[in-house]
Image (spheres, rainbow, N blue to C red):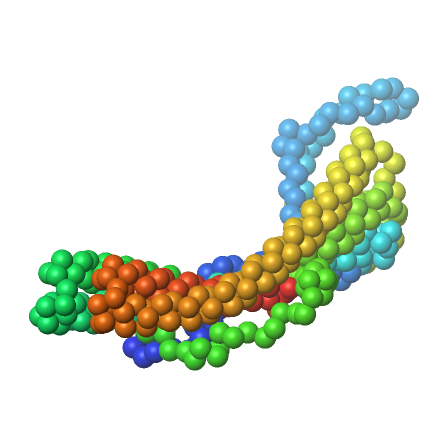
Length: 423
């Protein structure tokens, strides 16, 4: 039996993480078991077409020790005669073969219902695999984003320390007051706190990814940034919506449920059909009395025709129940189609917003860098205050954090669209 967690001593790639998550996911194994159960139900139903072979052994003993009195006629006069004690044992061996010839198509309709149900279960299995792939990829994106935020925090700490050194040099040169050194220590402290928080977020993201792939939280993830750059999900919103409705496996599973319900309705309606089956048997019957054991072997064959005339309204009630299930399955499929269409629109809008945010952040970073360069130059020349330099540096650090968030939000949006479109 596979352990729930397994150690990883070396860094793994994104593909390795996805493969490990799929092979060790209890949810995927549960879906596989559901598919196997549905397939077994198909074989169970198709067994109705196969002949049934039975071997029967029956032993019966009849004993009447006192003898049963009975009336008879002796020389025209009625007389009561006491019978002698009676003992009889009967032994029967029977080999019987029964073959269903016709049941009005009820078994065929049930087979079609089971096949549609198995197809729906298989579609749900593949959909579960796709969703697990998305979860692992999203977790990897979170790990990469946390690592990038950690680098930004380290860079911010280095910049804060550099500015503190510059303030000390300016103070030693007599260009600024000691208060500038005090003010410059605050960004260093904040940068260290931000660095600690970023490290905690990275550890949390790694722990979440480890729980998905079934490993210990102490592993390292190694993947190329290009592995997260998924293919373009589509050029237009209408194309994404159409693809989502055509390729979503959970929607296909709902349609399979509709077909299964309709086939079950047909089978229910044919429950009152004529059933014809042929029976052939070979039996050996023996009677044992006090005197002898006569033997009577023989064979028999026949055709049995059954037509139900009245079942108390049971079939009628089952038909109404199955019709309600068909309507329920159709409504659920239609509702899921609406939800999928809404998910496609939402994911597309999120992708466009994230892409525009990347463009805005790029311009913001360029402007913040120029502001930091000018503030430092003016501060070195004594034309700017320490607070102006700190504000410019904080703006640049925030711009970098916004850029990291926007960049990985694009990756999340693309992954979400691929999930919505069933890819």
